[in-house]
Image 1: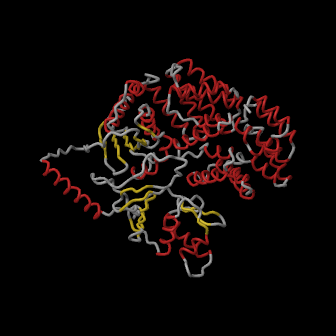
Image 2 (image 1 turned 135 degrees about the vertical axis):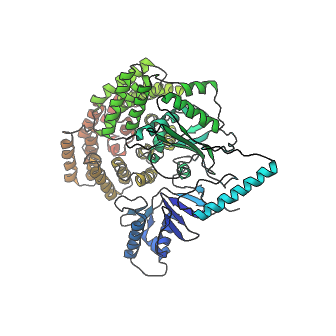
Image 3 (image 1 turned 180 degrees about the vertical axis):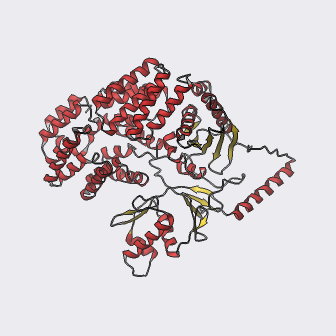
Length: 639
């Protein structure tokens, strides 16, 4: 039998029905002209690829001679009706001079809203753990926005009749309970994938509380070998969203979604566990809950989830589930708050996280996990112009204290492995620390371990590690998989992945810089220059300067290359600037002696990434120089 063609497309609060040729927004019919709706459907059906203008004109205006202006006008109408901003598009992206791309996260459904699959992520970048199949015989699935009351009533009526017939035939008795629904659980399976969404909070400014609860559940449930739990950062974008949980579960490619609501002022909480395939609620409870004992609350929630999934733990897993790195509840909540702010990846929030980690340590001076988190937060200052000489000693001291207090903290070993690799260039020590981290926490995924493997020229292992990290955090803007593609000369794959990241994070400066780097190696220098300039504009002149100078240099635009060197000098008066940026410009200018001088300076200041030294193609003209070969041997990079 051929697969059933989806009859409904869903994105945000918009529902498109190709069969009935209707569109809805927030449950209300959208008045779209037939040509505009055909155009929207064409874009959706060809999502995730750039559609050239000529192809669109041929498909929508076939046989009719029109100019590109007609297409521009129809796109404008669509954007206006859908509420899409061309300067910051959510649905339709303009690719200047070429065409358009549909970029919204999409779910597909058949008939009454049964999900058929999202098709929005590259299966090569994130192996799918779930593909929705045909709807099972089960109670009515969760309703999507836009489903008419008549249709929902009809479906419910059919469901009630079916249940009644079964009950009469079996002589069964149904007991209805207030505020709780009991539904037969699924048969036990191995390695169910679960996404835990940040719990919604009713009090403004307390979003961190919902994050805390979800993050703690992720950490504790990850101890089970029978569960694959998505990291909280993968679900962070859905924290306060009103999107249907099944749609979210399909987009995240998981089997189950756990979510809930918290009202701290009323001491009230609700918890829901939904099976994505058919919408069955395995856990649907609402109850009063005191928030004065977060440990007890987490124990209760973990037990409910495991029971609902028919998951049993062995002795070692049970110990991991119950392990706490502090018995001080206030210190623990402060640690979770620190982790919340660290995940936001801005300088202000990183500073907040450092302060909260310190507070957690003040509350419990033996809190090893808080010291590990503090080490991580200090190291992240390098993203915002912090000098390694300033943050590295603090990061090292914090992680060493963590291991002094508790040698079994895998997080601390992975941080020490990164310090050994990236800053000490002590590769044997790095390998020992990463191995110990994996021994303590087999599910640990660490992007920096991938770079370490690449530096050792273990490219296949490195790519496998980066693919796992990409699957672990599929929505992260700062993915390292495309950097691996760049270093290994897979520029087409790098461009494809970065463009997908940009669809969700169009204003993230490093993505534009890395896209420019890949474009440059593809020979597309004008596009590279455009991306570097975007990176500079979005970062207030911080990102992309050295990269722009290099492409100017290799393009023969020597005056502009020299100008970027002066910009770096000016920028260094305000923040730390790695000498590596000047090194690549001088390499582009063919000034090998100056390039080597700044490479050595970057190495001395510990702002040179080992993988860059070995694989950055912008240094290729230096690699045959005996002085460069001597230098790379001195660094200890294995050749």
